Length: 330
Image 1 (cartoon, rainbow, N blue to C red):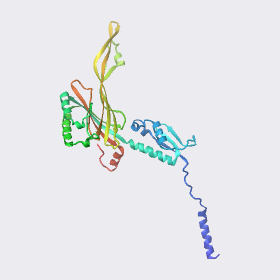
Image 2: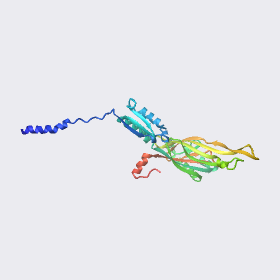
Image 3: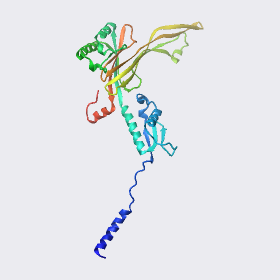
Image 4: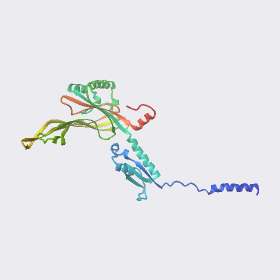
């Protein structure tokens, strides 16, 4: 065999398997795949701020945002709600990516929380009147909100030094007040919560009760206050808007009523006379600012003020600071 012909023969043998190999198939863009997503962290209290109280709200958002494709029963695209906050999705790979991006975006919206320090301070009436006079007009709120520092318009004030001096004088008066209680807690952005509360249990009994009845069915009423808030972080994450409602009760007396007589012993039922107190207010406070709320409830001759100091907590920022070994925001 001539050398030239032999070379062509060898080339044909080597090239034949390559020519015989089929071209790689393109992925079927219409093929359906199944994935399961955990939406539990997105709903409930964490989701209320974004109007996602339950799984139905998440499903509605998906259907209104993403085109799943024509429904064909079990053979077509499907959303299946499962137990413990799971959502099973049957759709194309492209749609699955869109759903994942949507759920990730919702999770990022909910990585915000508000840390609130709440101090309940007791002042006598004279000190309280002095406090009112020292509060700068620019930062005053509408009662029961007495003060909100760092509100959205504060950067436009003409004289920041005057405001700082007045606030310093107010802080000195507050430092001399009696601290009733203090608390620190982290709250869900946009969800209603109790930021401060103090209720004393006041037991009472009915005269003439059978021995042991008071222990079997103890009677009591609670006197005190609860300050309920809805804190919402602003879009630029610099401010917290508070809607505040005081829910308070005070005992003003005891009502007695005769029920009859058994074996010469009069049965007298007692019931406390309770007065409901409280008011509502709202204010915008800067991250790290101060809000003063005057309670309608207080011991006789005293004034109770709740001092709220919010700090915006962003999980992603906190994680980044830890990764870099930097101190996290206190």
